[in-house]
Amino acid sequence: MANSLVDPFGRAIEYVRLSVTDRCDLRCVYCLPKGYKDFAEPDTWLDFDEIERVISVFGRLGVNRIRITGGEPLVRHNISHLVNRLSALEGISDLSLSTNAVQLNKQAAALKDAGIQRINVSLDTLKPERFKAITSGHLDKVLNGLQVARRAGFSPIKINMVVMKDINDDEIEDMIEFCIAEGHTLRFIETMPVGNTGSKATDRYYSLAKAKERLEQKYTLLPSSLSGGGPARYYQIGGTDLRVGFITPMSQHFCETCNRVRLSADGMLYLCLGQNDMVDLRTPLRSGIDNDGLEQLIMAAIARKPERHEFNTQPGHVVRFMSQTGG
Image (cartoon, rainbow, N blue to C red; front, top):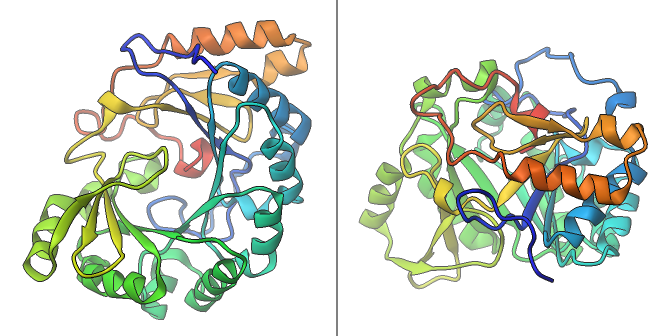
């Protein structure tokens, strides 16, 4: 299907990160503050019919990749039913999900049966007490969820580790060994200044260039690639099957190849994670816009997509929490 969504900088938009909730059952220090409860009310969220309609229009315009995110998407009631509906849409060939894995032990099989092809799991530490300090949660629930997901047929599972200075940067090699043993793919991510919690990222920032240099002292890193719509630069660890990705929005941004937009749970289309510009799709949807009008609205939005983020030049520019935008 021809892609009708090309932004002013020649980038074809083929990837939508779809947030189904701004709620989460963890409180990661770089995403939500402890005790935060100011979530959107459910009647402001797009319902499943509205989500299906928007994604079907994106599919007709040439988008083929959808990643379901949150908040934590598994806290959205009957999420596997939505997955089943999206997996049947014309044009959508890649349906994946990002999760903290806390509830995977209950939902992994249903998600696989409904059409989720790949999952990414956030895991920043292998130490139970440190995990609790970072997330206010329990590590054993995540590790159990990973085991259940693997038994359900998800392979490889991508582990996302946000590397933070003086918090978990001493576990980079441990996470490598864990993923080798468990057969997971590993992706390191730099912290980003999104929201009040993310604004502290400058204090926790750890350049992945430094991490790569460390790993090269112990392992042979062979340039590699991996299917998926994300921006990671991959290497294979010599003598193993492990592929390690580096996601570097701060030290080596990938804006020139950005192929995505984000649809929030409340129907706002964010054109860039590092900018405040957004387009309201919920109000037109609930005011009776037809599919042709929705297509025109989305195309006009893409025409406003900025060239790049401003995390480095304006680190306090984005004040919304990451969970409100979608991961």
